[in-house]
Length: 134
Image 1 (cartoon, one colour):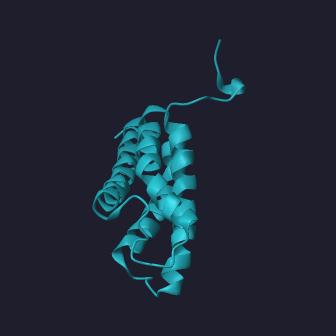
Image 2 (cartoon, helix red, strand yellow):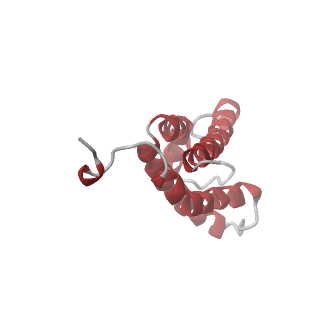
């Protein structure tokens, strides 16, 4: 498999992970309300807004991963890092380190960290001016 094809497969995996997150937040919003506290009860409004915003941010980033790969990979890395850091506060407070939702998020963060650089290097995007040919 050529590098570009493998990079595309990786980006498709990233987009699929983001769309799984979208489905989760969409389901939660439709069934429990857009500012649901995810069962924590004590979640401040900022956290509830963040979780609700992921309903929109996840699919937007998924599209970017496929249409503007380098921007999308960077956005996906930032988004999942913030999500894991944010959710770690709740996971720590409620001793949920082995819950599937959290393990899935950490797994996606690791996928981005390990496979993201390869996908970045072998995806179309803006090249440095020294690499352009005239």
